[in-house]
Length: 250
Image (spheres, rainbow, N blue to C red):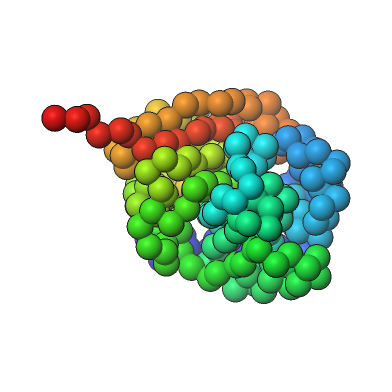
């Protein structure tokens, strides 16, 4: 399937999700139950319950060590759920910017930011394969179950590397495969938008991270998510911390 076709499928699906139509991977669980099962607390959910659409495969903010004053980028920010949680950590001296390529998600996140009166958060329309930011702009980057949707994952990680400060860090929760899908599964639109059809094998995913310039530490691997949300497909939610490789001194 061509990259432009994949992006069109993803945009159309998540535009519907923004309007509170169920995503294809959510099953029968409620949005709150999904959030609790992947690592969010009741307090975090209550911060912006309207922004919890039952998406994601982890809680990257909980994995991070975001500090007051940090400038944070959320790749694929959706309705703003993770961004709003991060806002509480950066404080009035920091800032959180979310980027998403779905018009409906950007509108929803901006409306919710106004509703909850968050002053130090903004949401921009854009593609995570081509970030509209200058080099070394961010202290922290987070991403929650989004990079698997991008056709060119190496480009995403290279862009993240470019906009991250040299002493910055990136925290990712994402779906990776533990065995290859069939060709039919790869072309299935529900699996594509459900974070499976475009996912990579775990080793390939980690290889791309390294090829983009990052070092990484695996923080957690949730294999049970396969049973809870993905009808037993052999996959896991991989949680990874990324940081820039230090150049050797001559």
